[in-house]
Structures are given as structure tokens and as C-alpha cells.
Image (tube, rainbow, N blue to C red; front, side):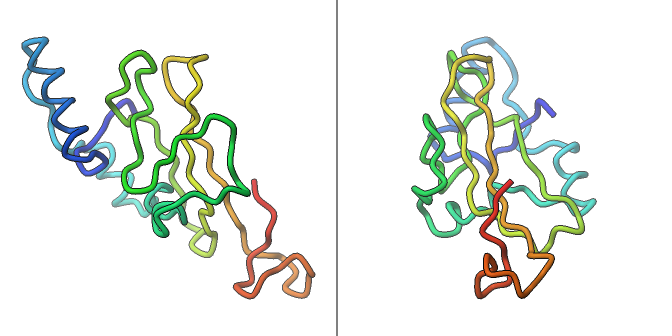
Length: 144
């Protein structure tokens, strides 16, 4: 989308964005955008806010990706690697996946691009409820 919204930022992050805009003699950015609002209105869900690391306040070390940021309260900036200020890269869960669990949302602090990659670990409902890999919630331990 290359858009961002204030609700993804801590007060400190938002102030850094305002200060950056001011230093360039730009108007302050809007606090939300029509693009994000439309995606949410259509029923897509932001994976960060569904993630267990956000809900529980800590990351699952078993799902750790090398170089991951410890994002739990706010999703953290995905752009720019040189001066990270903005979260403009999202992962949304579409309709039909209401029973999926977002086990972890991770930002990988890798400078091979001007954006930090976002990695999502999902637990999808098991197709065969009798499978031994299914836990008590009916979710498979397999991640994609």
C-alpha cells in the first residue's frame, strides 16, 4: 500500500514521523488512510493485531526467525531500512480464515532491501480432526 496509520505507532514513533515531516517542511501526515480503512471494511484482518505475540506480549522462541524484531505492542516500522519510521508493509488475513491462528508476526531486521520483510506463522484448522498433530483447539502444529 505504501500507506501508514497512526494507530500502528507508539507516541514516540508518531512524534518521529511528525518531526521528520516538519524537518522537510511537509504538512503533517494524515492519521489514517482510505486504503487501509477499505481493506478492513471488506473484512480483512491485520495479522499483527491477531498475532499471539501481540496478544500475549511476547514472541514464541520456537518460531524465532534470525534477525527478528521483538514487536508485540506495536508492529514496528518496515520502511526505510536506513531510517525506519513507517509501517507500510502489511499482512492481512482474508475471509474464510477466521479459524486460523496467527501464531507469530515477525519483522526481520535485514537490510537487503529498503523494507524489512514481514513473516507470518499461521496455524490452520486441521483437515482431519483425528490427526495426531492436532492440538486441543483443533489446530495443526504445521505452519506456513
